[in-house]
Image (cartoon, rainbow, N blue to C red; front, top):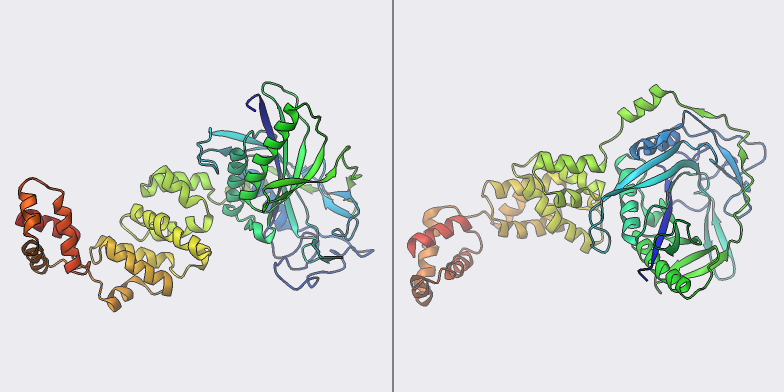
Length: 479
């Protein structure tokens, strides 16, 4: 198998955040009753005229700037003709030879999905263009239903160069692209809602060969995990066939995630003839250099820049910064809280080790969490000023996550204030020493590890409220 290498390219479709659809004033919303967000324009009635969505165009240019693309000063829309129930006009308004963005790149690094460290390098981006989305088809036993609410929604397509060689690289590219889209405010990229969809092109060839192998396209991929699994499966499937002398043919395959295998959908002997021609109902789109630079100046802080800032400003490790910036909502959550505490690293540890685990177990996003960033920061402040210990904080945190109550009220209600009165702690220390003469002799004989046993006994006597640092110091002195 090591005699062959994979060649992977991705076509990623992202729904652009906007109030209305691409060429009409229908609302761009998810989850409404089927066929309620439609009008003569997006339904393709005769005689209607499209009007382009300025925000969607600007968002596409911003995506290009964020991925180091060249921005076209002159661009246009085209008609892509095909006949299928999801496109009521029997053509889709898209872009062909003059897209808004070309020749970009995206850096991948860090650990891949499988945990292996990736070589830091750039993946080329061929183009980013804007088009209208199609309707949603739902297949039943003997018929299909069509919901045209999605038809006409602004859809941005990012086409990569065939620069990826492993499933991990493809996963890292997709993750990086998703982060950029979220940080720049272009899309929420919720794959469960169809806001981010991906077609994968995979081929294999002997190592050292420059010519590409036969390209196989895979569709119906609805999660990053499924994309990683499908690429790994397809590389193995194609490699086995090619090594046995089987000549592959160009085809489109689907992915069955439950069975963990791809299946044939249709063969593609020739490329589709979409009969592209310039959209006659829309004027070309032009940008001046000043307009492009104004959009560049207004770019939001991107993931890589935020990672670097977290390391420099909050003294985090690169690993911590990478975990916290993986999701923009989590990153914003930490950023709000970090400005309120003395030790942002402690806040980062609580988010990474406790909050993210609880969110995962509950199956909710950080935006749905009952603990707000300011509340978690308040709990960190209580640890910093030694009102509560780290151990007590776990009890406080659990109650906060369950109820949404702030830390101070939980501490007061449950009587969890840490005991820092030396005389009170000394009484617990004296009792622990008196109750454990055997361990006292062990300590005197040189077994210093038994000190931790005494710390545990004191914490038990104080019901976890004693200041651990004071307990340790008093025990050392007494013993």
